[in-house]
Structure formats: C-alpha cells, structure tokens
Image (cartoon, rainbow, N blue to C red; front, side, top):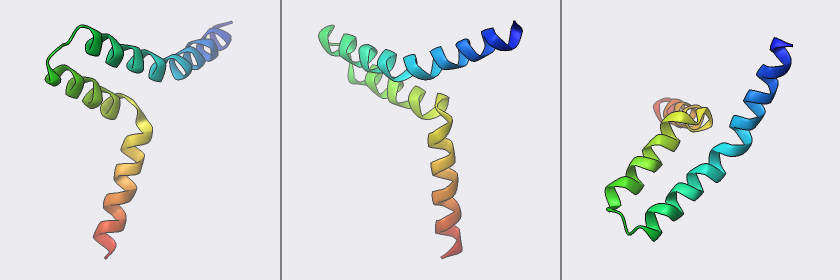
Length: 66
C-alpha cells in the first residue's frame, strides 16, 4: 500500500507542477505584481525541476570538452 501511494504522489507532483507554475504566472500577471516575483517563479522552476539540472550539467560538460 505504501508503494501504491508513493506512485500516486509522484504522478500527481509530475502532472501538476507545470500547470501550477503557469497558474502562478497568470495570477501574478492579473494581480500586476512586481517582475521580481515572476523571476522568483522561474528560479523555482529551474531549481525544483530536475530535468533543468541535467541539461545544465550536460551543457557544461560539453562546453568544457571543447
């Protein structure tokens, strides 16, 4: 049962992450918030989502090989 719940937690996190971030962007736009909050959302995406770290690591590795 524990593994079953872990699967649903991971699937929910994976499927709801980007819609939540897009909704946060739209909410900030509607509320006419300062641009720094949008930058904070972008930084959160880059830090929280592991695919960006992998892409950055591969880009740095390719850059160092040249």
